[in-house]
Image 1 (cartoon, helix red, strand yellow):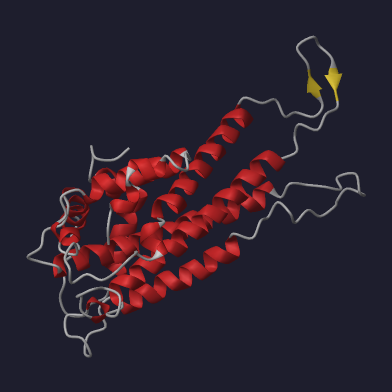
Image 2 (cartoon, one colour):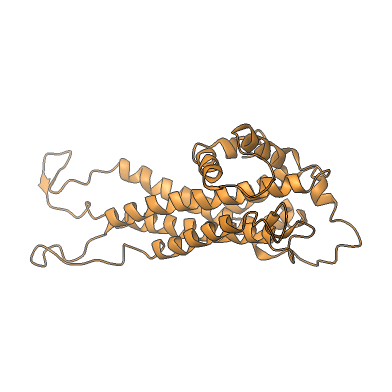
Amino acid sequence: GTDAVFAADLQRLRPHPGQAASAANLVALLAGSQIMASHRTPQCTRVQDAYSLRCAPQVHGAARDTIDHAALVAGRELASAIDNPVVTVDGRVESNGNFHGAPVAYALDFLAIAAADVASMSERRTDRFLDVARSHGLPPFLADDPGVDSGHMIAQYTAAGIVSELKRLANPASVDSIPSSAMQEDHVSMGWAAARKLRRAVDGLTRVLAIEVLTAARAIDLRAPLQPAAGTGAVRDAIRTAGVAGPGTDRHLAPEIETVVGLVADGSIATAPDPLLR
């Protein structure tokens, strides 16, 4: 693909802060990539990259902005008095509705939507590595012996299954109010349900991203002798240092996926290219 679409002047045409940050990160991650440079030849006839590549800053950036909004809501909530009744600073005891969890529930549902969409885009990029018609020179399914080995085919199945589950978890809990207490509590936020399903969504997103990173690392090795960018190479090296082997014949992928899930969850993947990212 090309990084030309991530240029700062193009991002300023639509000034969402998350989009600008995501695009800048991609430019930094891809700087100096021999793999990307190899496609800047007359033999490359593509006019535009697919949306899962070209629109990554728009989707990932929107997710960043969603997280920022949720953090703002959480900060306000932590600074709030939500007791009912509440004792005011001048000593009055007043009934109120500050306990209603709608502000938090909406934010939690919003995060679940973003998690599902980022995972959906990630899975599409994983699939592109494996499809010989779209991977531009990589072996089918990144297999060591195509037709005998399955490479990362089953890993993509796993990602696809998780994404389908995340789409179901993106259904808002906060619209599913049900009355109780003899119709006194006739509208509730369902914030607890929103929080519980978001926890599952974050775990699923982590796994889908781990599968993409694991697949990308294998693809980078299969592009040798072309060298990756310093940023993407650092991520690949972090995976190898953690004990995940490079390309080879078919093997049980679950332990490798779990290893990379841990690296994504603890921030090791995000920090591997530092200080390139922001």
